[in-house]
Image 1 (cartoon, one colour):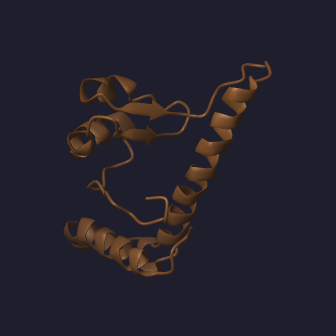
Image 2 (cartoon, one colour):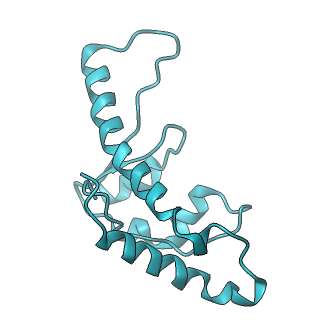
Image 3 (cartoon, helix red, strand yellow):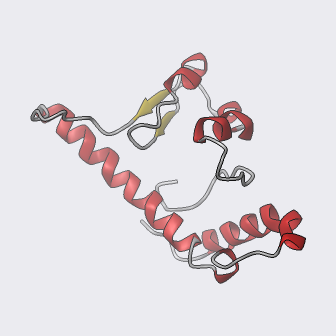
Length: 129
């Protein structure tokens, strides 16, 4: 959310799982409605997953060594301004000590719940925007 609140968390996956696979398996796409606008990092092209839902994907414009048009530059600035809140929310979540250390294997089964609780507590903190 623009306020910095988490509205969707997928289950956690190992490092060998691709971001696209996580999006497919998480149920995120099922929550997208017609007309929704999804913001993603450049290189994270999930447009093909959003098209059937009639949603749009916004990623920062690529310059490829050329100057952006005024319209493209303005659009990229707006996307970047929104992405700052996402980055701040993630940084806030990473400050929870329980998520920063080595987690014993015997607690693996509680990791998704621990992550969810940390996100809920983060949402109860002061708004980021």
